[in-house]
Length: 346
Image 1 (cartoon, helix red, strand yellow):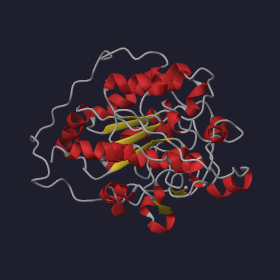
Image 2 (tube, rainbow, N blue to C red):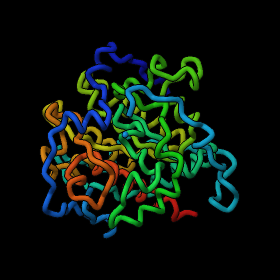
Image 3 (cartoon, one colour):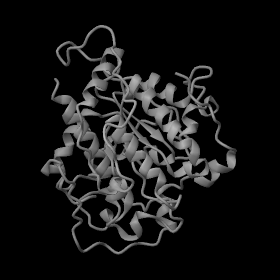
Image 4 (cartoon, rainbow, N blue to C red):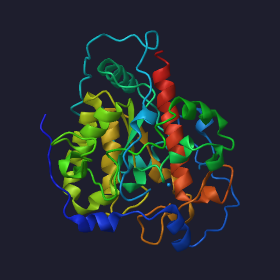
């Protein structure tokens, strides 16, 4: 398969999309009054444990601690797989029609299909680690913002009533704070295939950030969170997202893709595409857009793109009125849903 190598147009887009630090967020963002009502975002057709109240990054990635994030290869008895990988067939056409606006009512936490088990088994046969995940995306996918606190210890988060998530946090220790080689300020879908943005300290010659990350980390799951920076080249988003999904699936990596909170393009076209691709490829969709609909200002800062920041204290109503802890909680719930599904085969 040949992948497009369209380069991201100029460093100016990196500057436009750069994230400020959480401390800077606290300075420039007006405080929002604490919510006095519980947030009822119960998804449909999802286990009752997800019917919960819903609910940091340097601009440049630092070299990952490969020793700290490494863990043992799958051992005998964890899962029986053949010695050679059999790649699951890629679905060429949608299994059903998803209406233009149907994505808005899809559950926040995915109902995970049997498709992920096929991908997972392929990954184990290829040597992927069952207890690692990767993050693929822009600066919002880096550990200072996204999930990093869950490797830093209980001083940095409080699960509140969601104590069942301790199990999945323990299962994936080392992945939360790891800096991905495929998550960087300004990245859009095309950037993932451009060797120009690969970290030469870890990546091979002419290797793309996506290929490098999956080779170095060998995860079984990847959060893929793109779209905000793709408004600059919207015509490239769907074909490149297909390339990302197919590359990941062929590598035995389960993609968890997410809708975005913003509507910078004006017609929700990117979220429509994200949901349709998740439906077509039968992969988990975290419908984050739906999760922020009950937040003040839809969880967005004045620029309409950056998320409001709060600490990951899921028992604090004021924190849970901000978009970042909501994103981290729903991501943990989505990871747990996938983990529970693949564990049924052990």
